[in-house]
Length: 514
View 1: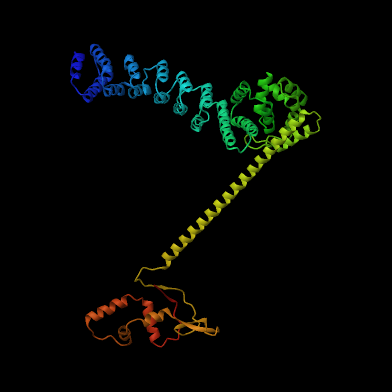
View 2: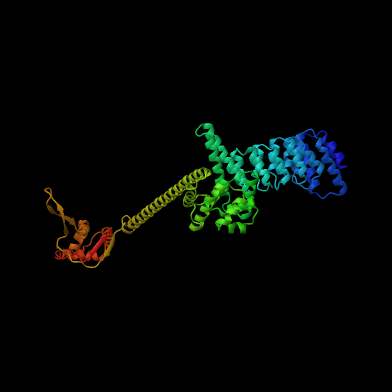
C-alpha cells in the first residue's frame, strides 16, 4: 500500500518535493517503529528511488542513509557507484561498505573521490595500501594526515618513493605519532636529495661533491633517528639499512666516532649474527673486537681506526661527543694518530675520511659555541630589559604616590602643627644666599608663609581684630564669622601675638600646607 501510494505521488511531484518525501521515508525506515510488512514496503520504495532521474532526490537519499548501519547494503553499494556528488557522501562515512567496496571505488573514482576515502575514520591496511599505490599527491597528503588510518611502513616508504619530493607529503608524514624509524630516515634522505638537486641545478656545486654531501647527510640522519628510540627501533632501522644496502662501513665508523654504541651493537649483531652481550664484551677487548670485525665483513683498513676510537671513547667517558649525532674531535684525533703511521696504501683513504670527520666535528663545535654565546647574550638582554621595565614601573609608582601624598584637593587649606624650632632671625622673612649681577653671593628674601597668609586677609577683618567688635549689619557679621571659622585657632593666636608687640618672636612651629 505504501509503495503504490508513494510511487503514484512521485509521478507528478517536483524534484524538491520528492527529495523531502525521500528524506522522510528514509528516516521512517531507519529510525521508525515499522512492522515487518511496512519495513519491507519502505525498503522497496527506497530502492526504487535509485532510478529517480533527479540527482537531488538521490543526494537526499544518500545524506539520510550514509551514516546508518541499518541501511540496506544494495542501496549503499548502488549509491557508491552513482555520480561523484552522491557517491562521495556514502564513501565518506558509510559503515556498510567493505574494504573491497572501498578499493573498487578508489580504483574507479576520480582524485576527489580517493581523497574522500582517504579521510575515512579507521581506514584499514588494505584500503590505505591501495590509496598509497594509486593516489596522487592530494590523496596521499590526506591519507598521511589521517591519524586513524592504518598504514604499514612499507606503504609509507612507497608513498615517499612516489612523491617524496613534495614537502607537503613529508610534513604530513612527520606529524604522525606512529612513524617508524626507517620512514623517518627515508624522509631525511628525501630532503637531502631535494636540496642536492636544487644546488646542482643552480650550478653551485658539482654532482660528485653533492652526492658525497648527500651520503654524509644520510649518515647523520640515520644516527639522529636513533635519538630517544628504543633498542627495537634501532634494530629495525639497522635491518632496513642492510636490506636497502645502506649499512656501510663508513656509517658504522661514524657511529663509533659519535658514541652511538646502541647503533654499533645493533649493526654488528645484524652483520655477524652474534648477540648483543657478546658484542658488548668484544667491544671492550681489542683482540676480540678484531675477530668480530672480520666476522661482520668490515674492511681491514678500518680496524685500527675502530680500535683506537673505541679505546678513546672508553677512556674519555660518555660526555665526549656533542648532542645528537655529533662527532667527537678527541676520539677522531686518536683514530687519526692510530692510522697515520701505518704503511698500507688503503690507509690514505681512511685518513682522508677521518680528516673530513674532524672538519665536520670542528664545525659542529663552533656551531654549539656560537649557539651558546647567542643564547647567553639574549638572556642578558632580556634580563636588562626586565630590570629597566621594573625600575621604570617603580619610579612611576613612586611619583604617583608622591603626588597623591603632597597635593591637596583644590581650594582646601591644611594647617599642620609641628614641633617648635628655633628661628635664626626675628624677621618675617628668611634670607637665602644667591648671587648678584657681579657673581658675588647676595641675600634674597623668601616670604614667611604665616605672614603671607595674614597679610592676605581683608583689611576689614584685621580692623575688626584691632578694636572691639561693634554693632554691624547681621549679614556682614555672618560673612566674617564664616571666614574666621575657616582659620585655625593657632593661626589666630599667632596673629594676636604678632599684633600685640611680639613680632620679634619666632613662630611656634606653625606650618600651613595648601
